[in-house]
Length: 201
Image 1: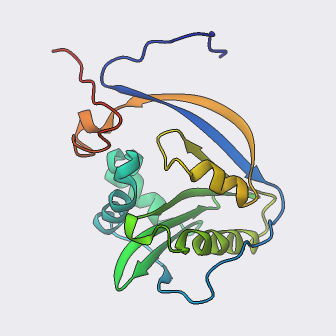
Image 2: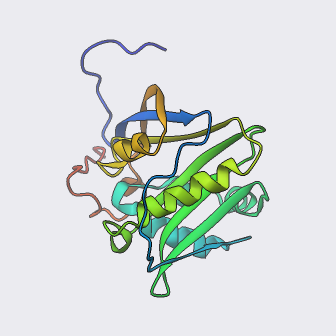
């Protein structure tokens, strides 16, 4: 569908974001990272719903991440238990402050499904270190393509970070979806810079 030029109304209770899809078709060189690190990375097999959603909300509520919070338990647990979905937690001082999720369920591809850091893990080099690990883990597998998407509700530096990491933008979409604050999946006070517009009863 081709969107018409000009403004389009977004109903109350909904949000709209511009999504940029990015990909790489061969391994990108690792960018410089800290030589001394203050964090640990652990792959977690079969995480519980509570543990996973707690970390997901911790790193993502600031950007209105809600897909895995709203997903039915059975469907989410099936994803978390799938051996082709690799989930890693980044910990600082014994506290989980980062999430990396690689999805190999599509043959020959890997989706960088989720990549997020809490405020504690930002601006210290952990993001670059974690991305280098993500690229390393993904390209150790027999894939032809690694891809990711980000949107205008994510961290304002996310898109530039992915481009610097070697991804190339190939598609842009507009996504309209239920505001997770209205549905109760995210606190109503979250992201005050994106005003909450509730439907009229």
